[in-house]
Image (cartoon, rainbow, N blue to C red; front, side, top):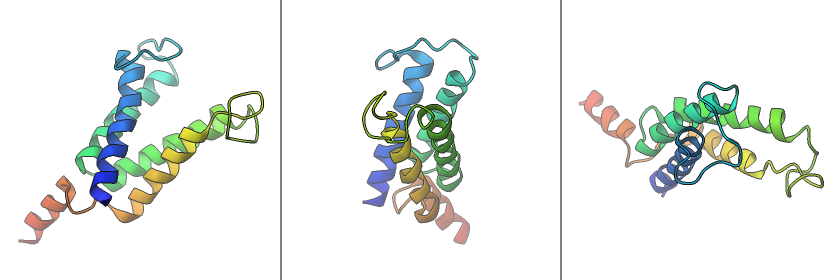
Length: 128
């Protein structure tokens, strides 16, 4: 179940990266120009760490970076709008996804990738 959670979570996160970088599968609300700060770099981090987490490769490191990115996104972009994360501005700050991704990835930092992952295969080969 942990491997399934990791796989789906990583693919969803990578999907946000492809949305920002390639306007796929749907275009983002705002156009993200190549190299623009911070949106383009956030998209790169989301794509790379999402693919790594989904594959279960360097899961703990990738999840730590992804969790940190979402913590920064929440406190930098969402929290200044409003204290309450549930709901869109002005009543809320729209930061629920950032919080969920932050803590979901933080969980993976401590649990690891699960049994069905490249990390597990690499560890078994290294032990043998």
